[in-house]
Length: 266
Length: 247
Image (cartoon, rainbow over all chains, first blue to last red):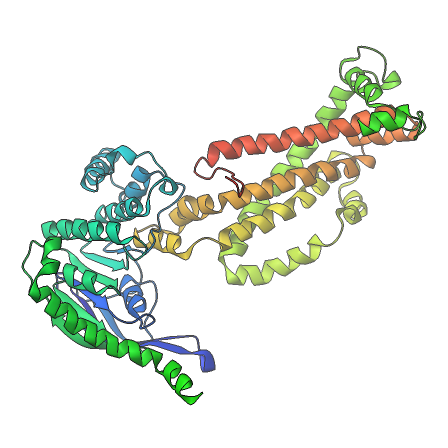
């Protein structure tokens, strides 16, 4: 079981007058084996929520649990894919993918076999000897995906992993990720600000409020699986996306309000 | 060219500034004892060069062995930085020549104070660059290692060290240059061998052609040492080729 649960979580950065509260009263659950996207206006604390689940930071108040156990530090049972791949530039593609398995101290033969399989799965076998700097953005994110799939984690955390890619590549990567996920159904928490992406990938979409962030609304995505890009042309997809767009728009306006009143005053 | 012309045209007195031709003949004779152009110094170079090389490389090795761990400490720990960094920044501003008397008092004459002075001078560029190299590591890279289950030792060896290596190499190159400069200063006093000693001796006995030939040879050895580090860098940092803004 690898259910992610946040209970009444608050996270404040800094102290005194400079203190910023990123999350307040943030409660949500990602059921075991579900793909959940976390959506919200920029600066609403999406990434902070993900960092808490990853164990990169501690909450100021409230509980963060994965599989019933309190999260205290990062670990391979909670794999993370970062925006703008955080690969090791001094390692070749194959060694980047092998890093986590090596840390786990697996025998050399097993490492080789698993790396071979993963390279094939992400379609980068012929690029195995390249360095990250020699790859395109889309290829680098496929390596990032392969290196976390190698960990065989129960939980996958993704922080706008396709945000830095061009629209074309992003579409292909979403399709690719869906394909992978539909095969082994891990628990995924996927942070994004792209509406289409949020609906296309998810079983469930969580919409966050403006800062301090908490969950404004939760929507079930009842689109059939397996999903292909043409699902984005269906009326049901449009209905869901438009509903979410309204919710996010309200929050985005709230973050802009200081700006609007300033303009009104002058 | 300018040098040869100004001597030939009599702008500078020939007995004060020998021509490049004379100097190269002197250097060849210093090394191979083939023409007698270096006079009583003929064939002395290999012995002095060996003495200098040993001091420079010993001092350099000692400096690097201390500077890299200390630099990593400063770069990765706030507390360590607060304690150690001010001391280093203070010492860094004292000209190394100022340490000569204390080195002699502590270590007497001979190789040891020379190596100590070289090591002291070579320490600073590497420690400063290493700590910078560690500090500028992308936080997400360290987080990646944490998330994949790397422990403290594995993070140090497999992540922090390789990530800081380009900056460390910059430090090594600067340190090597400083080591050669400091070696000459160290050899002016307290030792009876080395290229610095040869240079100083030739000055006292007024042999400008030998002085210039020796100076040139020191420059050459420094240059070769730098190339050696670059060569190692090329090997070790295949992923990080030195480029310029124009590629």
